[in-house]
Image (cartoon, rainbow, N blue to C red; front, side, top):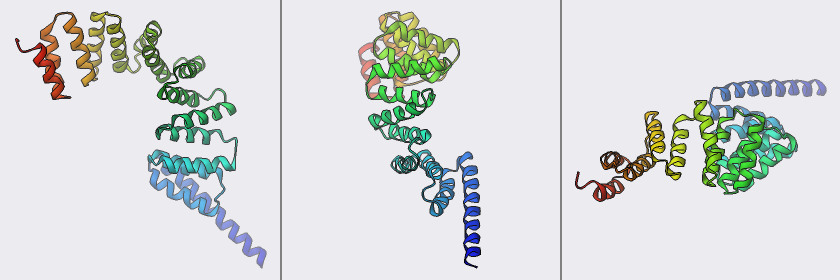
Amino acid sequence: MKNLFLTTITIFICTACTNHKEKGAELFESGQYDKALYHFEEVLSLDPRNEMMLYNAARCYEELGMYDEAILRYEKSINQKKDLAIAYLGRGRSYFKNGDYKSATIDFGNVLYYDKKNEDALFYAGLSFMKDSVYEKAGKAFSALLELNPDHSKARFNRGVLYAIQANTLFALSDFNNLIRNKKYLSNSYFNRGMIYQHMENYAGAVHDYNKAIELGLKSESIFIKRAECYIIQKDIVKACEDYHELIKYDEMKAQEYISKYCVEL
């Protein structure tokens, strides 16, 4: 009788866990992370050492922007299974989103220890090193990823930005030319290439690229200031002043300073 009771309880627990797992997975896929979390936590109340349910709960917390809670759940998942690469990846992402770039790079390194070709780990490692101003390691991470996957546009874009920061002009141009040729991240690629041309004193090229970026919907304080600077050097004060008047929408005080300096006689 006792054995029958235990068997019945076990079947009940297994059935309950399966139902909650399936419902949680369904809700997660539909973006209902708070509701999915409820079901994963229900499984954990019955099976608190289940590394995949700990991982699933952590993913929900991460998607909900609750990074400290996510890190805690990822850590518990790792404690149950030391070689669970996806948990290191998730914890690394959460550290990254929380601004702890050093801890993030350690976790992405852990992922790469188990999976040397993990594209997400290489990409986020590059971003983390970049945020932490460790530019050489950032470049190596992005380049390693692009060797694995030359079509990884985000890696190419960020490597282009990195080269530009380091004043590696020709390498930066190569990456942005590639992106523009393949129609990836067009507005931001044109804007960044425009800044490189401006740095190279190719003002006509810079204006062309700023125009393209604006046509594609990239309108910001920075782009109007940059284009106006080129117009000033080209002695096209009328167009520069048009940009400074456009700048009023973004920073009226700064715009008025430029207008007072360049546009009072127009």
